[in-house]
Amino acid sequence: MKSFRKELWFRTPQRRTFINITREMQNCVNESGIQEGMLLCNAMHITASIFINDDESGLHYDFETWLEKLAPEKPHDQYRHNVAEDNADAHLKRTIMGREVVVAITCGKLDLGPWEQIFYGEFDGKRDKRVLVKIIGE
Amino acid sequence: MKSFRKELWFRTPQRRTFINITREMQNCVNESGIQEGMLLCNAMHITASIFINDDESGLHYDFETWLEKLAPEKPHDQYRHNVAEDNADAHLKRTIMGREVVVAITCGKLDLGPWEQIFYGEFDGKRDKRVLVKIIGE
Amino acid sequence: MKSFRKELWFRTPQRRTFINITREMQNCVNESGIQEGMLLCNAMHITASIFINDDESGLHYDFETWLEKLAPEKPHDQYRHNVAEDNADAHLKRTIMGREVVVAITCGKLDLGPWEQIFYGEFDGKRDKRVLVKIIGE
Image (cartoon, rainbow over all chains, first blue to last red):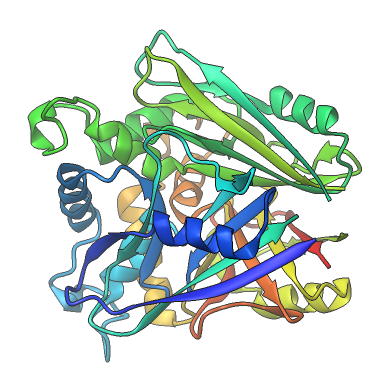
């Protein structure tokens, strides 16, 4: 069994944004030399998400609006977590979007459906944050 | 390390439905010959879900009602994604239910709790859609 | 490839609570002797969750309040599942929080970000319930 590990770093200018990282994930698979296995990609921070969905700007706008309805940022003092912090909503939003994805690797390629794209979802940006990629297989 | 891959195809007559695929998953484990490992099962389409819960029709009705409250289908024009499409709600519903499950395989069996059943959740049916099963182990 | 399996048992005095199990997870990794691989931890019951977030009591209070808003426990008869049961809300709450986490193992350690802690989320306690830990790797 082979294994591979890499960290990706992000520092987004906005508080909230989605970044397509599918190409970086395929680069990791290439670098690993693994032909058959599984790739785990997870946010290492608890106010960010890795998720799979469509790369369509209208849908991303809908996600932002929907998450803000389900877990509104303001007023900040509606959350007990927001004593020294103002990011309680980011913890909740990331919970809905998910911490991680596991993707199959087949014949050295990410085994994704036709519209599946892997995204980094930032909900409390403007600071350095990391994503972990771990691949195991052969 | 062994690996196994299979696609399942679905075409549901309804827009939204839940289908118990636990038996198909055990069949994949049997076919793979893998005794110890992990099974990944994921929707390959971004308006469908794989999730684990109870096979109880009352609960499935509650899920449908609840998802429709959190991410209503109509009016279609409340979503920017719905220009050429009408399925923005399906992307949101599947996000809550999840894209994938990872299940342990122990002694050649799906290592599930007493009530755990694996479901395909369709939120935009009436078309051919695929599910990926990938197993790694020994 | 090596594999490792263990069950953890919980019986919480409250209906709903969060328990930090990060140390138990690292103990499992130590016991397995696996240096590089993946750890799957999942609730074996469908009214409980394994999730990763911050070990901060204010945030846990916010989670409880938020989940109760999105999927209220009462009135029990709002749910069709609640005929012989009263725990439909627990199935919904656990869906939002997630059934499982997959964590990378690197150099014999859980490969977690600085604030990542692994929790058992109970939404229908006061009874014996199990969590499965499965590790594969080398």
